[in-house]
Structure formats: structure tokens, C-alpha cells
Image (tube, rainbow, N blue to C red):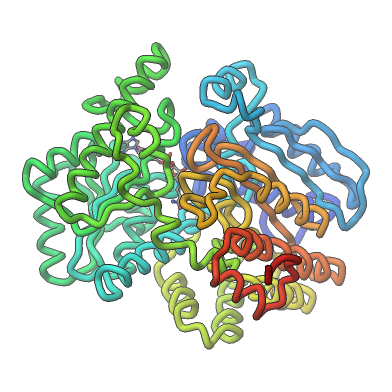
Length: 554
Ligand code: NAD
């Protein structure tokens, strides 16, 4: 047990319990892990990632959650409402230990103005996706998804590799910081622009980015040399994307690939307006939030216009899930949606097979537990070269942050099979402590987000939000250890609804049954959702793997 500099955030490790059972212990350790200074972007403010995505509403609520988890019995369920513990009810041993609802607002009022108003009154917090649902694992959580996106782009446009290409992106924060590494893992060169030098430094410290500069000319020179030499290189460029992209255009510099992962989903807290220092931005944000939002949205319009201009000149351009196109469109950039979102462009086929960012975390804190599970993946899924390559590369290149963890895109059937093996290994004492198994909300059957995960659905059902609700309900019934239902993650208030699950493999028979159920229903919802929308690959998956869908053949 080690206290971090945030004092209240404690690194619980090893096989000793601090609670009345491993399920509660898992929730406690994962809450702490979300806020571990090695993991969270601004732990002192309870901010985990993604703009103001928080793990608890305030420090008082944090203390009360910790106390509740320590006191929670094995047949009780703690309810958390937007980061505040509000009730403990008697349930039963197979029920979730925690149920979480974050940032949900009645649809007609679901916008940032209402949210900020409630937030100011202390009535709500922004849960993002994995921040408020305690399954964030640092930049590693997104890196495979980012890798898969760039790999698919490389396959579609550059013969399967990003070698000899330059990718320009912006935003090297908690999630966006995975981009430079994902590009170099695909053999390419990346210029990642961030207005905050400390964010770039963090990526360099954790080996997600190679070098940094504050000179555009220097960045272009280094990138071009590496591109011509066929070398992989990532460069952090300190600057504001809404200013730098037009400057690149002026110099006639057009990258092969272009995207963006600034926190544009949140114009007040996530995006810095054009030609403004960080200090001036912080001051304006506090003193005149309305003026800030106006300037921030105008800069986003300028940013998207430059992206469109670069696309016109040949850059393969895509939106990376931050809703920047919507803001630009609202600001008058009529054709902002001319470039596609990353899900319809590169990811949807994986969703049709129930695949998505599945992850596991070693509660022991011992990296050896993760390495042992790497070996299991290499053995059990040896026929899947792509997956095995990923595991080998991850082991070599990805530094752990906080509790050791691994991410791997597994689909329907694979998740339950792997989960049961993990549980067996815990039971036999082959691992030093139980394992937490979870996923991002950005998954195949857990999210309704018309500008992102459900953009351009085949049947036009982009805005239908019944799916994440069904997903949360069936997973709670199946006995997930904690289940969460959020609004506004990824793309901001009014634009998404999504749910999360975490299940703990503690080595018991009961856990085995719960794992079998939940790791089947959860990816199963992904297959079902895409069958319903008319995707042939999802129908094929359902037929081959026996997902029971009443109207499959009609
Ligand atoms: P974050 O808030 O940790 O980081 C955002 C970064 O953008 C910060 O480092 C900030 O300094 C930088 N920034 C802000 N304005 C800028 C500007 N004008 N020019 C250059 N840099 C600027 O957020 P995050 O967790 O990295 O997430 C980024 C965005 O991506 C969010 O909108 C999030 O919802 C979205 N997201 C996408 C995916 C995906 O797979 N596509 C997954 C998770 C999150």
C-alpha cells in the first residue's frame, strides 16, 4: 500500500483485502487506479481524461465512495449517481456490487449549458466513458483501437503499411496520446500537435512520442527526412492546431493522413482558441466562459476548414471521435461532414463480430500476471496472427501505467473463453490475485453516438439509444461486478448514450458462471445491434456462433 502525491489516492496492491470481498476490492483498486497520478491527466481535480471526465464528483464524494466500498457486504449493491454514492441496498451475491449512472439529462435539456449549470450547483459530474466507470487504464486503453484504425487505413490506402507516409493530428492528451505510437507501430511518421507542452512531455516520458519541437519548420523537416528514409518517427509539435494547419497549407505541406483528437467535444474545457496562450485561455475560461466558448468554436471551424482544404489537396482525412465536425457545421462550415468518422471508415466490420476494446487488469499490481496472460493469448489464439502480433508488440512497446493491464480486441465467443481461462488460473493460484476484466464504452453493442460509433448505420438507426440501455440491463442481470450507464461521453452532451461493464475473475465457481454469462451477452449485444441494422457480416457471425436472434432470417 502506497500513498500517491494526491494523498487520498492509495496504491493498493498484493493479495490482502481492504474490503469485505474481492468484488468490492476490485472497485476500490480501480477507482484508485483511475486517479493514480501515473494514469489520470489531472488527478488533483479528480479528472481522469477526455476534457473533464471525472472519477468522482468531488473529494467528499470520493471519500464516501471509498468508505462505502470498504463497508459493502457481499450481498449488497452501492448506487452511484454522477460520482456521488447515494444508496446501499441489499441485493444478492450474484448482483453487481456497484451500479453507476453518470451525466444523464432528460433529452430535451441535454446540452452543455444545462450540464454546466448542474455541475456548478454540485448536482452532476461528467463521467466521460471509462473515467466515471472506473475502468480507465491510461493511454494503453485506446492504443490498440488507434493501432487498428491506422492499420485498416494503411490497408485501404497504402498497401498495408504507413511506411513513407506522414500523419498529422492534434491533441496528445489521455486518449489522443496513443496516436503517435499507433502511427509508428504501423511504420509511419507522425506530427502530433498539442498546445500544452506538458502533455507532449508526458507522452515522451511514457514512450508514446519520440521527440518534440516548437518549430513548424523543424517538425516538417524531421518528418520529411524520416518519411523519405522509410523510418518510423513521432514528433510532438507545440502549437495550436487551428493556427498550425493553415500555416502548413500556406507552406504547401500536405500530409498523407490527417485527423484530430483535441477534446473538441467540450468547447469550454477541452479546446484552446486560436492564437491564445494557455494562461490567457485559463483566465478567459474563468472570467468569461461565454466569450471563451465563442472563440473556441470559431477556432474549431477554422481547424475543420483547414482539414477540408488539406483533404481537397489529397490528405486522407477522417474524424477521430471528438465531434469537431458538428461544431464546425454549427459554426457555418456547411460541408464539415465531407470527411468520414473513423468508425464507418475503418472499424465497423470489427463491431459486427462483437469485437472491441476488451481489457484486463492485474489487481496484484504484479506485471508477471499480465505476462502470463499474454502467453495464454499467444497459445489459445495462435491461429490469429494479427492478434498475436499485437500482443508481442504491446509487450515490447507499451509501458504500464498504474496497475499492470493489457488491451486486446476480442469478439463474441473469444471473450467468454478467455475470461474462463483467467478465472481458472486465479483459482489454481497461477496468478497472484484476481483479475479485473472490462472494456471501453466505445464498443460494439454498448453505445448510441450518431457522430461516432453509430454514424451512418446501414438502416439509418444512428440515433436509436435503446441499445446501450438493453446492454446495461442484460449485463446487470447476468452479474457483472459493476455496470454503468452514461450520457455525453466522447462527443459531448446531447450526442451519445453508452454503457460500461466490469467483471472480476476471483477464481470462484460463481465468478465462472457470471463470466460465462456476461462475456457472452455483452459482445452478443454488438452482434445483435449490427444484425438488426442489416450488416451481413453480423448475420454471418450470429449464424456461425449461434447467437439466438428471433428475426434473424426474416
Ligand atoms: P484530453 O482532454 O486528455 O486531451 C486533449 C488534448 O488536446 C490536450 O492535451 C489539449 O492540450 C489539446 N488541445 C486542446 N485544444 C487544442 C488546440 N486548439 N490545438 C492543439 N491541441 C489542443 O482528451 P483525450 O482523452 O485525449 O480525448 C481527446 C478527444 O478524443 C476527446 O474528444 C475524446 O472524447 C475523444 N476520444 C476519442 C476516442 C477514439 O477512439 N476516437 C476515444 C476516446 C476519446
